[in-house]
Image (cartoon, rainbow, N blue to C red; front, side, top):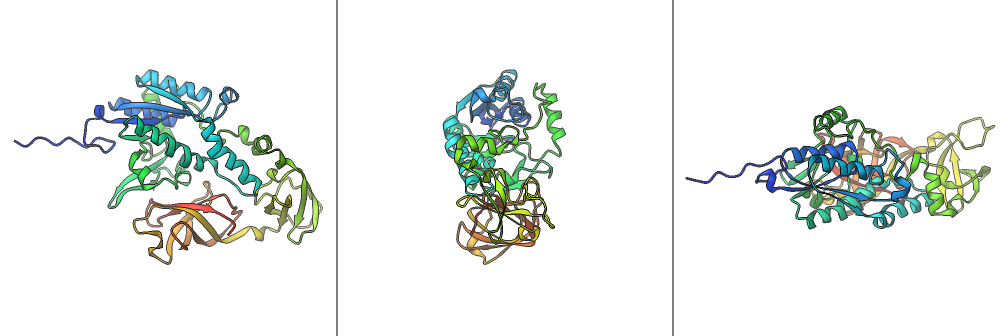
Length: 379
């Protein structure tokens, strides 16, 4: 009689859950806590790992962030309640070198960085993933709202079922090799309420914990104060000028301004409203102009991570949708590859406030699939 083949478990392995080790990246929030509890409840060999990413003492009283202070305590409590091991790894130096320093330098260069993407790319999905392999894990699971689906050429990255929770903008740089090892158990859920219902089902004390709102190392969204501490020269005063170089006013440091900003310029008495259209940190100039100068149609993109089935350069053009900001829906565009990692994106409808340092994420216009993305530069 032929032996019965083992069933494929919910994580995609042909063995029993008890024989499947999964490392869960636990931030201390409700999402990753639910993932850990769900997998433990299903009988998997769960190991929780939390990365301490920035100053523990400064973060103790700061709620609404991740990876420090009270959040580490919350992750540990979930592990104790559900009966699986939990480890805290000190990644402060790695995080500072790989994420915080670039964040500050990008702002000083007049760009608009997105540090959460770099954290996923350089810390969570690199170093933490390697740690998971060192622990002999079969896979690593996270609480991100994104979907991993089986495709004809391997795993594919897809937007979350709930468009309001979708985190694909922050995960475009996930490589095919990483995707093979990662699992996202929440991506199919219809809403955040469904996640909180699961937290209540498992009796988690973080069930009603508020979502994090700010970048974890930027208290109360005050970018300027953080950058001033890291790079004191960023607060050097300078001039607000128009596009012809005429001086309209003074400023207290380019770090206080972003592309597209209108309020707080301190240059009243003008007939038409002016917006920040460019930051020139070398000259310490904040350049302002009319709103129409903010409209961008052509976007240069580099450091592309391509997740399509055919090579990026196999076509002269790709009809795709792109997302320039996490808060905007994907919009139609034409992608023109220059080589394997650089391209020009033509937006069919110009967007305002496009800035170097932002991500440009590629989507299949006919499905929920993500084709990767890259970083906007000055060209």
